[in-house]
Length: 130
Image 1 (cartoon, rainbow, N blue to C red):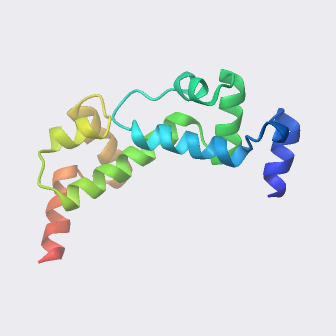
Image 2 (cartoon, rainbow, N blue to C red):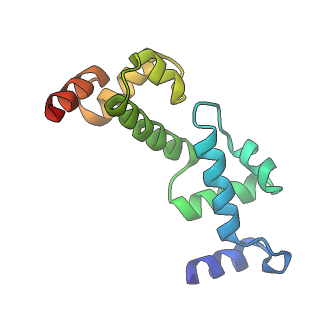
């Protein structure tokens, strides 16, 4: 709460308007999670918050400690892992539904993050389930 109060006073978030940082974070999370397969931008989120690009960017960086593109990448990969282990969709469909531009980009990023391909991850997880 101290962080929120300091942030609000430093960055001009007006508690008198009834919209505190907590509410902004709810909207930001909703924008990210509901539109994960789409091109979510700071401008898009700023529109929803009725804030400037700069204010929105500051709120995201201060609250999440990461830039939006890193947040999106982490959430997309987490969703992809859930889909790989819970569904039998083709990898190309999972890449599409999680917002990766192409299947090849998804493979490269997945391998870079986890050291194995999505197919290898799926096979290892299915092997452990049986």
